[in-house]
Image (cartoon, rainbow, N blue to C red; front, side, top):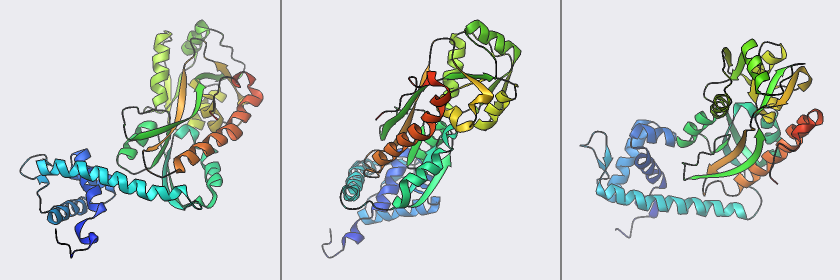
Length: 324
C-alpha cells in the first residue's frame, strides 16, 4: 500500500456500500435501485473499487454475475466497516442538540389522517426534509429493502428481516362495522348479514386481509358477495350508506371515518383476533431517532385516536393497548 496516498484515494465508503448492495441482492439493477443511482453508475463504482483494490470482485464470465472468492472476502469486511462507520456517525446523535435529518417514512394506508400531520407537528424543526409514502405493509417492505424508505409504520412484524429493529406502538382487536341499527350478536347473525349484504373490503395486498380471511374461514362465514375498494374512508362510507359491512380495527376506523354515529362498531362475534402496529427501522441507523418516532407515534395514537374512539365506544377502552 502506498503510504503517500490519502485515505480518500485508498477507500470510498460509497463504493463499498454499492458493492455490498450487489452482494446482498445479486444483481447490478437491484443494487442501483437500493442505492438510488443508475445501473451504469453502480457498475462504475464497483469497477472503481476493483481498481483501487487491484482485485477482481465480480465473476463477469458467469450469468448471472456473482462474487469471486476475493469478492466474498471483501464483502464480509465491507459490511463490518460500513456498520462501524454508521455507528460512528450515529454516536453524535447521543450528545448535543438534536440534528436535522432527511427522513423517508412509510405509513400504512389505514393510519394516515390525522397521523401524518400530527407527526410532522411533533417533530417540529427536527427535520430538514420529510418524504412520506402511504402504502400497504407489503409495498413498504419492498421499498425498505430497496432503501427507498428508512422507517416503516405497518402491521407486519417482518420477523424474517434480521436487520430490522421494531417497536410495538399499538395492539388492537379486529371489529365489525355494520350499518346503523344492525345487530350482530353471534356467528349466526354474521352469516345472515353476509347472505344479505356484500362485505366491503379494503385493498387486496393488506396484511390485515390475510388475518380477516383466515378468521372468516375458521368461523365458517361464507362471503357470497364482496366489494373491494382501495380507499379506507370509502369503505366506511359504503357501510354508512347501508350498502355493506366490513371488518377492520378501531384505529383504522377512526382514521377513515370521523363520525362513528353513522355506523355500528361491534365486537367480532366469534373468537377475538388482533393485530399489532409496528414502527420499524434498520438496526444501527438513525441514532436515537427511532425511539423518538416511536414515542411520538404512541402519543399521537393515544391523544388523537384512542380518546375519540373510546368516548362513544367505551367497550373498546380496555381492548386497545398502547405501550408506555
